[in-house]
Length: 265
Image (cartoon, rainbow, N blue to C red; front, side, top):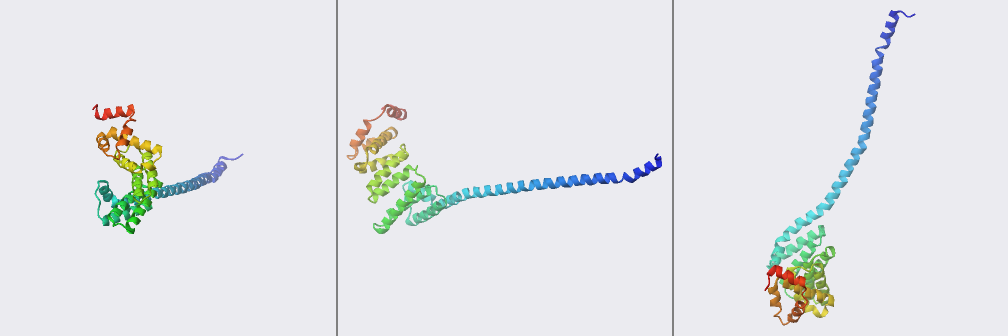
């Protein structure tokens, strides 16, 4: 039988080693847990960083061309506004604006920079003397407007402008097609209606029945919105018959709209 002294001696022998072993196990567990935790986070952090980098590149790729295009077009903004108001800047300003818009279109292919460049080149052609230089400028203007419409076809003003340019350079069939597309892309455009009607009167022999019908509707729409312009148009020998035919086709809806805008007269 073991004596109390021998039991105490044995306890004294093994007791110090148990906390050390327990500590080793705890430390090992902590170390292993730390390693697992650390190795578990690294791939996730790397993936997140890669995704963030890709997303940043995509955002930059999408945003930078538009930003550069917008900044480049700023140099032409005042010239475009002048042309829209009916004032033509000098040739130097027009040339600089055309260059700015070419740079803008190279970065941001939204179509508008091209069609604006066509407007500027057309104005520049009108300031040039008749001859090869003027024809070259008209050719460049047509190419710029067509490029813009191929990228953004929903531009009624650009189609009307293209019709005018093609008629000016002798392509009357192309002008008739562009006029048709102008009306298809936006029928209710008060600023364009009289311009379209004038074009249609000159090109009427080349217009198909559907386009003539759209032209008549332009006259009715203009009568609803600005009846005084139709009254003036009806006094023109080249337009009187078309105006009379068009107004004979007024619908009740168009008459009601006229009354809402102007009252009974």
